[in-house]
Amino acid sequence: MRRFVPLAVTLGLLAGPAVASDPADWPALLSEAQGQTVYWNAWGGAAATNDFIRWAASEVEERYGVTVEHVKLADTADAVSRVLAEKTAGKDTGGAIDLIWLNGPNFAAMKEAGLLYGPWAEDLPNWRFVDTEGKPAVTADFTVPTEGFEAPWAMAQVVFYYDGARLAEPPRTMPALLDWARAHPGRFTYPQPPDFLGTTFLKQALYELAPDPSVLQKPTDEADYDAVTAPLWAFLDELTPHLWRQGRAYPQSGPQQLQLMADGEIDLAISFSPGEASTAIANGQLPDTVRTFVLDGGTIGNASFVAIPYNASAKAGAMVLANFLLSPEAQAHAQDPDILGYGTVLAMDKLAPKDRARFEALDLGIATLSPAELGPALPEPHPSWATRLETDWAARYGMAP
Image 1 (cartoon, helix red, strand yellow):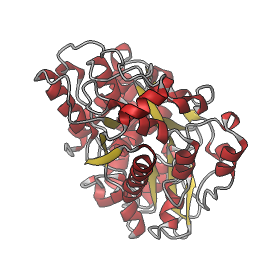
Image 2 (cartoon, helix red, strand yellow):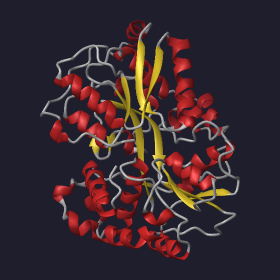
Image 3 (tube, one colour):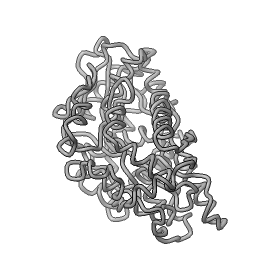
């Protein structure tokens, strides 16, 4: 989903152009946006996510006269590559993509290559509700400052979920997971990197196993990469033979992993959505005996963003959609476990009482941990770690995509 285009192919392009459609003059921008069609390139691999995007599109069209077309991606890098190809061909206006669900290495690549429009995000009317103090991930994407070139719309934190009917007490550290896998061969797996969840499992394990995890905030070329990752590869060498299908096959995505859980083939799984298990229970995908847990040392958290390519055709409409995604109504809708179960990027103390009430009224579900139980999120490593980990994992375990 979030494979990225290496910076080496970006031809050394510099920062993007200045904003013309001005979100600071919101009435004028709304007028400009009317009648525009926004082609939102976003991951299309989960039915619940697709349903939410369809709902948001319907609301934006009815309220603002902006049509939203969801271009479903299997891999965000496909959209990045298309914008890069248009830049290379000199197509600096009338681009095919108006908005991209983006984060991490893909954002770093596009920002470095001058493929993004902006800055604009911090001038949106609903930006005033964003929790910039309590959630630093909304202004720094995998350590890269966003600087207004993308707007957050969902918070995520790594959790694991398990079926309490089959597993009484889940392992809460990576060494404990290895011991459990040895005793229960074939009952655990993770999505195949470079699927973002698979890569996240590698990063989460590295956080716990690295001698000094603080080096993960720096680029890999500023650290002793081999020494830092040696414990990870030793751990995976021992774990892999005990995985589902003895590590000879992997689910290709989070939804496929969830299906393995639903089918009773595995007993625990990784997720980047604290509410995913409750949502799956509500949708009838998982039994109500499934519960969520986090590892003892904390888990990685990040934000999902939307960004506008530098040559987008419907920039005003894209900003209208991005602003709607930041509205208390849309944020509460996304946090509802019957819808998505995503965390909000908003600060409750910045909301009016009636908008806080939207969140207070939510039943987060029997499998969702409270914020206190989730604990503080670990920051995402620098994007270069994901790149090298994916490459080395494929070379070591013979599962190159």
